[in-house]
Each structure stands twice: as C-alpha cells, then as structure tokens.
Length: 530
Ligand code: G4P
Image (tube, rainbow, N blue to C red; front, side, top):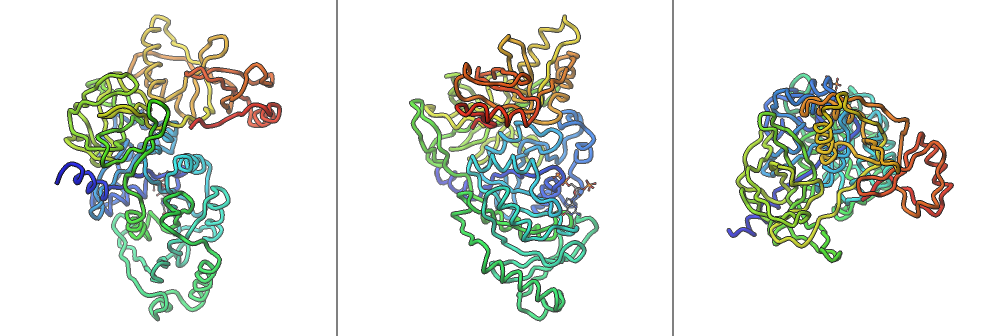
C-alpha cells in the first residue's frame, strides 16, 4: 500500500466528532457509555475526574488530580466496532468558554444530547449555531427517557422550531419513564426491547428484537399501548419529514434517537447508527494567499492542519505548553518539518502526543481527523495553519461576544513583569479576551462563567502573581460594523477595541443592546465573528 492508499483506508474508518449539550443533559454519561461499549472500560461509573470536576471550579483546578480515563482531555481516540473514534472534548460546564466553540470547528460531526424533560436549552442552542455556520452535521440524542419526559413529538417540534432544522425520528420510544422498555427501529419496523443487566447501567443492556407486528411485541407492550404506538408511527410516516443522508450531511435534517444513557437503553443502536451515518474526514475549503478558495483533499494534499486549542503548563515538571492540531490532510509523521504560514518559517513537530483514552502517548503516525498535541515553545497561535506545502490558510476560528468583563491588577506592583507575561500567555491561549478602551485602559472579557477564576488561579499557580479582580457592570457586547463616528451609543455603554483593533460596544443590559440596534440602522452589531 502506498501512502495515499493508507490514508484513504484510515479515513474511511475514522469518525471525529464532538458532543454538544447543556450541562447535566448527559454528555459525560454518554461518553462513558461509548467507552463501555467499545471495550475501553469494563464497568461504567468510573470515569475519573467526574465527581471531582463538579466540585472543582474547572478542569484546570483539577489538573493535579490523577489523569485516568478522563473526558477532560482535549481529544480521546479509541476503536468502536473497527472504526477509529476521535471524541473531542467540548467543555460545557463551569469552564464553558470560547475553547468550547473552537474545538467544535475541529469536528466533522456533532452529537446533540437533549434532556427529554427539558428540551433544547441555552448552551445547546449556542453550540448548535456553530455547527450550522461550519456546516457540521448533527445527530440528536434525546436522553433520560427512563425519567418523566416531554412528549416525543413535542421535543421533535422544539428541535425544529428553536434550531430551525428538520428532524427525523430514526427510532421511536416504547413507553416512557419507568415504562420505557425499548424503541422501534423505524427503518426495519423492528422493536428493540432492552433489559437491565446491572444497577446504574454499569454493564451493557441486553437487547431482544421482535418485529413490530409480532405477537411477542403486542404481548410485551399490551393492547392499549400497542394501538397508541401504531397510531404515533402512522402519524410520523404520514406527516413527518423524510430522511436522506445527503440532507443530513448538508445540515438540513437531524436524525433523532430516543434513549437513556444511564440505563444503556438505546445506546448501542445509537452508536451503531452513528458510525454508519457520521461522515469520515473530508475535504475542507481553505483560502489561498491571493484570497481565492482552494479545496484541500484529505488524501491527495500532503500533511496540513490547524491549531484549535492551546494549553499552557500541562506538565508542571516541564512547564510545557501544548498546541492541539486537527489534521486535515495527509499523513503526519513524527519529527516532520512543516511550514508555519503565519510565521513564514519551518517548524519541526517533535514529541507529538496523541490521547489514547486519556493517556498521553507519543505518536509515530497520525491521519486526517486525528488530533495531535505538540509542545509549543510560544510559536503557535490559535487558528494557525501548518502544512508541508504552504500557500493556504484554513478558515479563521469564530469569535464570540464576551458576556463578562473585568479589570485585573497585580497585588504586588513588583510582580508586574510576571503579571504581564502570564496575562499575555493566557490571552494568547484564548482563555480570556483583552480589550482596550479608547483611552488605552485594559479590560478583560470572557464568554463563560468561571474563566476569570481560572485565570486568577493560573496567574497565582503558574506565575506566582496574586491579583485583584474587579468585575465591571457590562453583561453583553457586540462588534460594530460601520462608521464609528456616526454610531449612537447610550450613556451607560462603552466603546472598546479588541486585540485586532476592531471596535466593540459593551452594554449594561440586553435591552440596552436592543435599543442601540434600533438607534443605529446604518450599523451592524454582530455577536459572532466567523
Ligand atoms: P453532563 O456531562 O451533560 O453535564 O451530564 P452527566 O452525564 O454528568 O449527567 C448529569 C446527571 O444526569 C447525572 O446525575 C447522570 O447520572 C444523570 N443522567 C445522565 N443520563 C441519564 C439518563 O439517561 N437517565 C437518568 N435518569 N439520569 C441520567 P447526577 O446525579 O448529577 O450525577 P451522578 O451522581 O450520577 O454522577
């Protein structure tokens, strides 16, 4: 086999995806079940760092904790039924940040986990928007069917209305809450009945299959419920959407699966459908230096990729920093020399790391779809394209309007140098954004909850600087597109410049933002820069 055949074969059997959800919908549980069903772990309920994660303010603060199989790694690789799976970590909890959005751009597909009693929640909506903009196909996993849930049709309608995407039920639940006993696989009119084999779903659930029309099915469900089920299925067949893989890959329809990650009911059929439906790594559109588009084929283009995440000081003993690179084309080989397009110089990618179920391992080879972590002695920035050939750049990563703002000072003026260094490092990593008022004053901004706590913790822990943080009263923001001179702002809002000197406006309240939009019909206020 030559290299291209090798790459083509590797790609065919690879799925790189992220799980998006609102906190508590069941992302961790589903990830863990993927490990259980792939044989990576023997018993579910042992993903380390999970309980700890809830207690710790962030993954960073839990860094000292032993790293076992942890979903806090940037990406995890393992095999499921002969397919190489790369799961990207998109923190959705206390440490929700721009990292979460950026990581999503490195996925070829997303699984959207929805709590069946809650429907589509806020963070899911935001993350779904990124998928839409990046044309990432989304599978929907409606979780917790073993608990009292909203009507399945109601949930499907909500997905359609709130997210503006067609939905198609691939399976249909048989019963709900305590009566949730199985699903109808609509493609073959087959009923899959699940049986618990352990408490808390620590072991795989058994599956018994009967045809929808079989006496066994009728028997198991009972006459009344069976009639109701047939009626629902008829309704779906008559009035529901149609499903095509083409529409799914184009992001026009999301296949919906009803299940319970905790009890393992519906988990295996979902994973099986997932590896069948999810796309393998495919071509990406990049921009040539003259601004024209170029299609980068994963097989025929020599190695290329981009940096989607930076993390400093992962290994304290070495005070190293890691750049996480999504490989988009070609074969990656250890120690290869690539061009950094931004710096215009060559870089040797030595000591590359992969994440084999949480264990950092040194890689010899990697393929499109894989994520590698390389030591970053300050040469990589977020969004950097690297390649063997040079001459093009992958799309810039999206930037989101920050929602929390603060001023930060070093307690000890004598530590100013370390403070500046640490702050710049954290800003470069994209953990926080640095804004400047028109008078040159620095304001820090973040997308999600505890980013500032993490920043203060890291400044103290890694740079030895105690800081004082003063939160500012702004609650939302937007980039201003248009002439700043004619922009009408309210007295309480503030104009600032981002790191690329693009003007932004910070608002005290959402209504202030809405009012300002109406007052500036000639300007555009944008929440996301794609
Ligand atoms: P997240 O990563 O999306 O935040 O959610 P996670 O998997 O941590 O699940 C949140 C809570 O919901 C957990 O309970 C988990 O056990 C529960 N859960 C997940 N999937 C299901 C399901 O299918 N059915 C039911 N009934 N519960 C489910 P917890 O009590 O907060 O945590 P834990 O003590 O179980 O770890």
